Length: 352
Figure 1: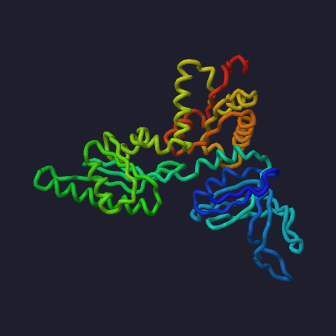
Figure 2: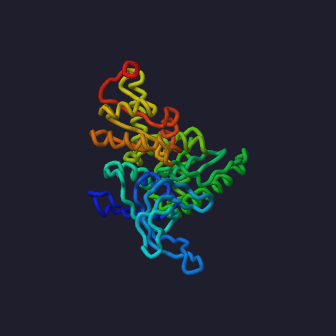
Figure 3: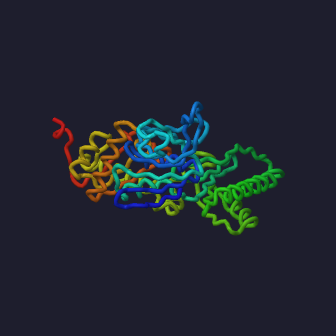
């Protein structure tokens, strides 16, 4: 996504959509009441016939939805600007946004700090993870929306020494070629290869012999395949690479949350009602929310947006984490939103 702030005072954004992921982030940037301006087309009456005419329209947003199977975001609203000769102002219209489109958004509530936190979750990590043993392997790319599995396969190497070495070489060669192809396709900056034993070293050497430009890090896991990838996510090598990402920040907030649950439960809040209350009195020091809470237009999203504004206005930290990531799944079990508080709050006393 290419995003430029055209007017900081009024919150006018120019947005270019470069990928399907951009539509996902766009759905979190746009709120009900925003004005979206784009090139679109509309059926109009010309004489005795109806024709579909291309035009630039601006609509005040009422709702959004993803259009199934077409990778497009449909934005519904009331036309507030358009060619006078067609009489479209005041009518309903749907702008369909896809890859390659450019739109302008004027925010009804504008805070560039909130926008910055939203944008952080789609800044590419460009990290590939590989977990391999003699039973299976899995290759994944770590994206801000979560971990995307690129390839996985069960492996059955012969047990006899006579055939094992040749089969191992074939496995290493096949895996190295797949890693290199995927690394170029996804433009990764680093590859982390992990295995229980020395297999990772052989894969690294095979990659280096074919493409010395790929940066490879090694780590140790107990298993190959998907289980190994999950283990690898919590290892120091990956943590160091993604240190500044929302996933890592979310993990650190969850660690603090778990500590406070045991030591001072009144220093945390979870669930929409408690976090909303804490934010309204300026008590939230750190806020962690899953992206699902910003999907769609419902009462919950409006509450979450109000919480975000309250927290940033009072100097709190905000992290938005993908729901499909390990920390995101944990936060969803806690109601989709949690907070570390500046001071203790007894919610039972307040509610009674």
